[in-house]
Image (tube, rainbow, N blue to C red; front, side, top):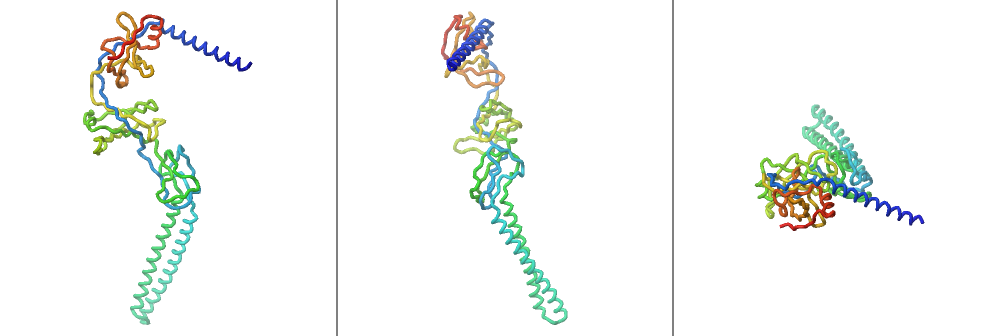
Length: 359
């Protein structure tokens, strides 16, 4: 009984929604149909090049010493501060190396102290004519060798302490962990990547442009960055043309700097660069007049007699702030309905219906 009542409630809600939609369509159909002319306009001619977003500062942080990973403090997607600990490697072996090096320093310093005492004693004996000058020369040589041995031992100890410091891996700059390449308990090796870190505040889009198009661009180069995934269109803060070309494809990479504060952008995201080439006359229709039905694109044309005709179109690129370029299907001066839903409602009422394919 409860299931039956639920089905009845669902059907009633659907009926109310349909009735509301029909009422809204009828109201829109009864209001005056707003139209706009299709016109030839001077618009900026552009070229679109596809590419990806990359981080200006991105680092693949690798191990500098060998050992088992005993701590992993981050996961992919985590934000880290500069100097924050990312991972730790077992330091027991490194600690033993440091202890051995420090013992060698102590041994060398003891040998140096003994050599110094022997040198001073020999010098007094030579002054008193008890030993020869050759004994003094040997004592001097032993003393110098002991000093060199102490310097070498201290350098070895410093190197051992530096190696021990490599067991703690920290973030070189503040950013976001984009990937973690190891798991807890694995063996780290010098040069093996542990995590990938990037700075989300400094991003750019890298696109590939044919050399012929690059030569046709206006100077200075003006570009916009399109991020279709986010629905964003942004002015590039800077444009850098790399001074190199691919010999096989005859293309050049261009870097477009993203403005600060764009949320949801990360390296590897698809991006499109749109470059201004100059001015051109194009047939433009308002974007609100475009209708998309599955694979068919068109618009509702209002004839001088007031009849409404659905016209299939072949369109070009969208022109921000202007409309959409029409390649075929409309002529300069024709009127199109700005509210396709209201135009369709009038057709269903019998005000006129026809479909003409694009030429």
